[in-house]
Image (tube, rainbow, N blue to C red; front, side, top):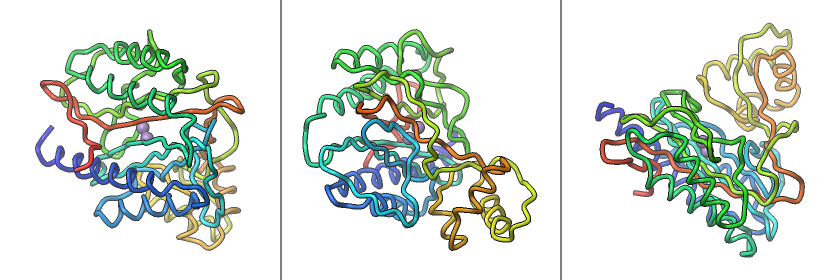
Length: 298
Ligand code: MN
Ligand code: MN
């Protein structure tokens, strides 16, 4: 990887982390989810980068893929386990990072520690030539040593220019993952620890979408929205809040574009009701001697 590209990754990574850390400090009882989403996203934009995806704020059994709507009044409540997952890009070079916090209590500190420790163990292992399955083995073992289960159907992933989930998957469970890591690749590692079954799914949309293809729509608002999505979101996910910045009432146009398969809506991914899930995530560059954490605070 050339120096200029590396620098762009470092810039995106540092901004994503700074936004995630700042946002995590605002997660308090009574604060709105919207204020945290807006803070993190404006820090990224003000820092000279763009959103790689809308800020994900997932609570308790939710593991990923929820972001508040533009008119959301949801607030954080005491005891909630909150995953804040933030992504920035500079010229398509993405930094992806996540922190878990518990609101106003510390009942789940071991759960939060489990995913964080698994991430640290994984980062220490990374070097060119390591079998990807070895990383999953250690993540699995670390999370289970705390008495929790790893989420088997969420994985870390390769990152390429304007591509959030490129090529390889970094498993969170043992006996999974193909191939070996090579020098120069950028990967996100993101262990999830759960008190539930370690499997996530769901059907309820979480206000995050991805452009699929241009479709014919007669409604002028939907047409305007489609144009803005195509122009501004490249191949990266966008939120209902982005849509509300283009047209005043995006609910119906979004529904229409989703139904016509012009866009794809991400469902909120949750473990079983009553469970709690934690996540920790960093983006790293595989280097000759190991790896460089790109999503670190400067
Ligand atoms: Mn992430
Ligand atoms: Mn990720």
